[in-house]
Image (cartoon, rainbow, N blue to C red; front, side, top):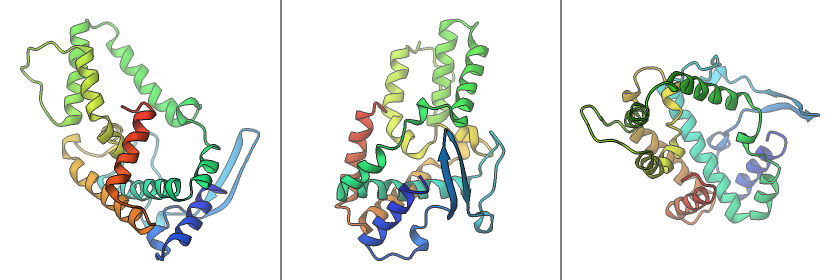
Length: 231
């Protein structure tokens, strides 16, 4: 990532448009990176001077940090898709060196699985109707709606359809993870504002590197995610 992909991204940006370095300096400076025999080390720039902080495992991010992350992800996605369309051979050359994160033993995946196992342990003795309702209530929390007083029985198929319809938006702004990470009540998270900031930076970045239109970019991303089984 730091020895090949990021330098290639930066070179691609410089060749495509005239931008200030700081505007597209999405990554900390890398002073050393090495991977050998399944062990590696990376030495990066200390980012505390520009407002970043180190968080403990499963500890919160505040709203401002989430917005910074999402805006950077928007620009990163735009550059990735721009390279894929404009210099596809280089893009695929870089992409083939990556492995699926979910097939690895990385700590983030272990943490996520641990939460799932804990949830299943807590719910293993409840009846099916109660379990299905707990799933719907969890979804309602994410969507910001209420199911209090609703007597209707929700089937797993209905729940699956709701998640399918919501998957694209949730994937783009990472809000399935935000309730686990953000300080304060979940209902105070302004998803619309976050999504707007993400897409605004994404569209502007894509236009500056010579992309045809943000609409075409969205269509490409929807197609790719559908093929990957995201929804």
